[in-house]
Image (tube, rainbow, N blue to C red):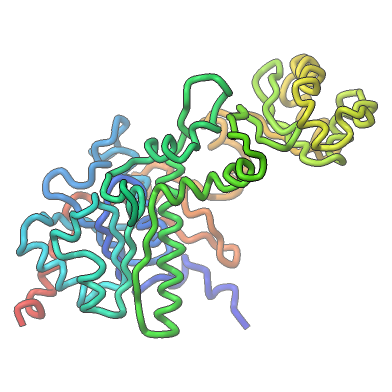
Length: 393
């Protein structure tokens, strides 16, 4: 029987402790995956260009401790190795170290970079059959765009995500976080953990491939299904979503409240609170498909009522009957909210640090404790010293 303290990471090893990962990555997608793996206990060695390091170090302001806050967010718990991949001697040393010491290589550089350095999956996995190698590309490993570089907003545009985001007819807008990059990073983690389990059973590693575009297309899954089924091109729905009503933000005296009455029972409760239980019997609004078909008419009734009261007024009344709702908050409100404080997900490694969001996982009621702060450039430049004798041998 599993003792609940077995996974109390504050008192013992984390699940990936002893797993050596080399991150030949830049920007967000690869580094985000590396942060998750480091938070789970892996030793992650981040390869960075000499002098400048990862591009994301300069993605500011704002900055903290001479690097951008984005760099700190996605690179906690890692070591940094300055290495010029264009230098054949340096690339050779890294290759020998990876083949001898690494369990996983995670790379998301521009197409051709690791191949020219002799650090590609085919080369390394042929020398170490236990090695797991994860490639992150922009557009994938096939097709006319396979050699093109890419960033998160390009994929939000190319995949159609921007076409269903924001208000219909307005300028295209990007989702307010790097959802494609971080989503791809999570697919990397899933792929790597899957291959680690396979290696545990078979003794063999292998290659994991994913891309920003594939992640973006995965987020567009039901939109693709809708279009194939109806022949209609999906459009943006503002704060709402296709096929569910009412399921959007409504303006109140002091801000916006998102209401999610996603079924007939909840709609009955909603209109009861609003003082119009008869609307649940109106043929236009009797079922969810009816309500979505007649959303404009429904909102013409709802919006004037919501606009007469404060957010808390509606929250209290909807809360009593179980109608899901949430205010549109600014970030300062979010981090101070008692619910967020209760989760304990905001963390800092030491007393001189700043709060950052921790791993959104608990194991047997224990969240993995904060990893170390993001590394200074070159903090692990002595990595080859211990390996020198073996390399020369």
